[in-house]
Image (cartoon, rainbow, N blue to C red):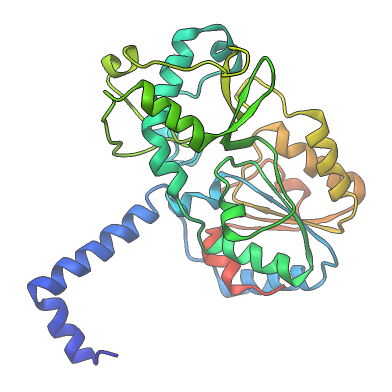
Length: 314
């Protein structure tokens, strides 16, 4: 281990300054999509710890705020979310299905963003949840995210409420293919696309010049020629009812509910808070900013999930 004097000498050297700058750049990039917030107070951590210790079977509901620390932006965070920083909006289900131009634009931007989006790694919050699950007290994780970071962290019994970006589905014959395999088909059809993204959007797409979009070729289903769509619940679409019922069955087996990184703005996740109220569940949240469920919670901790969760045990 370097002594302080050696470290000071190291950081003052040109090599040390370069390394120090790179560390700062990585840290800044890591939290670029996390809204402004104050550090979590110890009393809030203690209150959460008491909540967990009294939970016999815990149900966890996660949102985009748990993945911003991994470098994936969200839609609604104040000052840093897509809606606050761009006039761009996600494609609607109806538009995607009815417009070949909309599908061409979507797949062109998603094709360029996929290598970066698919390589993003889980952060401390995801890893902590996986360790809680191994302890046997965390019954299930329901995520509104499509990034597969809970799976990468090692979690099991994960309900992907809005589907996953890692699978592509034919809308006619329902044949499913891995997104990585579909990427190879796109690459063969579009060898001219060489753009590299500077940043990605919440679902992994990027900004592209119009000429790159106009020249992009989109393959149809290899089995029936149908429209290929990521296995994601687009805006304007509904969560499949069997998926909702599976989540309800797991919720019925739990006595406590913890919300992590979600404002619960959309009903698809909020419905389980209402179900929890009917069951009489104890509920709390860790989220930067208010949530739609605040009136139903014992308390809410206004902090980063990645700061709070590693300080807790279950």
